[in-house]
Image (cartoon, rainbow, N blue to C red; front, side, top):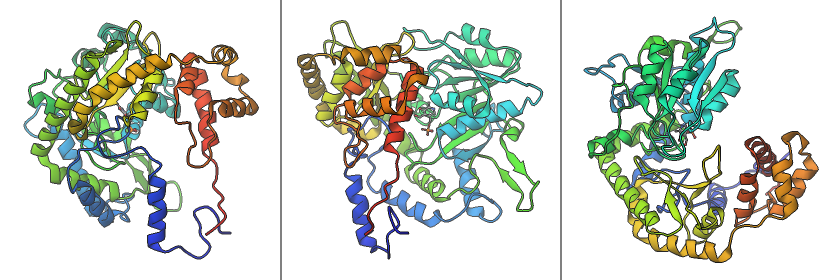
Length: 494
Ligand SMILES: Cc1ncc(COP(=O)(O)O)c(C=O)c1O
């Protein structure tokens, strides 16, 4: 029976931990301020240990039943209270009745916001939601899972924001939710929330502000003097807001908060079921059994850093953003997609600039892990940098390395895909993709899926192929590629 993770007769604890450490050495560096996506690092000494200890205290507590584990309920309520305060709600504000739930992440918060909006209108047979093209992909996932139609409003290639009039015009009799971002993940710009919320309110429709990414930094940046536009519960018409504590609240992964302006707004978010012989199930979120670990870790993080800690971290992050943006401005051939207004630096190639995908590889070779973004609907391909406080001490090293990487990308020249591959990318329909074709493509691109290097060190060829393909084919190719990566490791036992 033994195989894979199941050893034959048990492996000593220190050996198992050594195995995990060996595996972790394959990963991108989660600390050190050189990774500009996936992780949020405040570089606060001792914080990891505190969060891990808090996680250990509550790892086996089950969020399934708050009456059995009041410790978890108390910590969740404290997290919701903190998030509500940070986002303009609570006693003494114009949104005194804000309530919320703790979820596992931004995607779950957005799915639940859409579910609550949908289920508030059981009379609608074909509910719809309106989102800007820059809204996080999790809205599309929510629409897909919940069978809600998605009306996507384009964003201006200049401002990277939707036109509020176009958002208003997209609202119809079946619209149950209008969404906007504060800020958008891809470019870090804050949508015109006040105008969009006003249009939604005028139509009697809910308005969700996706502040998953920026909800914990924008209020602090504003306190530091940044011109942050209104985006929280102070804005009339905003009915719900999501904020991820595992992003800029610097909690370990697995915690987001979904807030509603009042309990009536939250009510259709719950799922209750008594029509079976077991316990009556009553869940605010998607999961039923939930570990208390991430919640305790988030609670400890907020308590330890405190308001003053977050203000100081936002200041450090703001300065890092300014330094990185200046480094981009100084390099010929690059241009900022937008002047930074939050914690994202996003740039693209100017006329005569380098091949961005080659540049990303050159930066990786120099120890900087950035995130390439494919061209989409008239917006050029770009390079995304999520900036956290840990980046601050690294900023001075980035400029010279960026200039050097750009020079190397120019010297290497753009990726030239073989003509037949290019033809495939532009003409193939997703349905025509056979497993054989995918396997051949993957092998040709160096995506072996095997061992220590499941993907090639240089990804420019893969990104160029994906960039040439329309979105539906990109999706299908990536599903197939990831399917190749996710296969059982049967092991030989040990
Ligand atoms: C604006 C925004 N919304 C939602 C999400 C989804 O969050 P998660 O990855 O925690 O599900 C993200 C993630 O980056 C985001 O930036």
